[in-house]
Image (cartoon, rainbow, N blue to C red):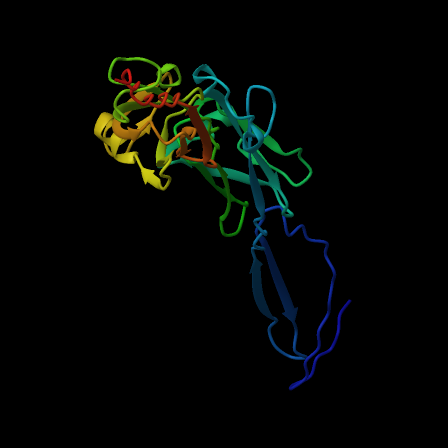
Length: 321
């Protein structure tokens, strides 16, 4: 319909058009106005308006990890034997589009303790993910993980995606598993005299003070190496705790690391009074710790009693003259 417009006058017309802001399209609108004065040539006016909506970019990525039994890697049971130390861990990555538009995955990289891998090939060409799609899950091949090494395994992933029009966005996640190695240590004590006789078989001595050899045998029946942090013994009488960690470091080095299988034995020679008419005991306590995990402790004891020599009878008096 024609409409008259006079000098200085302005008017506007409007129309409403449904526009898909998530389609990644560019919308260009052109307008042409023609007008005729009462006397004179017609004239035209034009204008153009272009809009390119920026689609919102929003993704999330989640790392999961399971062992060979389907447990979460953080809940993997402690190994019981050295053969149980190597456990296959399977890492999976789940990508979800929580935005309003379809997006293309342009980068997908994971890092595990400094080693990186490109996960794009695991997508098998499916790089577009839309809001109504099911999450995309990709899994790496199972990786043997040493549960007894005392290592911390840190995995991170960075995903980049682009909407049709708009800035790219990133999604990240991290997963850390620190397997706790079990701790198990035992110690046994033995004692012999200079003749090699077990101390609990020593007969009434002629010499009260003798050098006895105390031997301490340490065993690590567990699956992982451990560091001995404390090693003490007490001989009663006279009593008093004494560190014998130095015996162990002299035998196997410092720090003293004990690995399965064992045992490792160390000995010391101690002058002991056998004529006290008391029970003689030697007790020992050892504390050890695996690389990751709680410390453990064991104690050992050896006790014996030496028969007291019979008193020397008085001399028999001679005949009375």
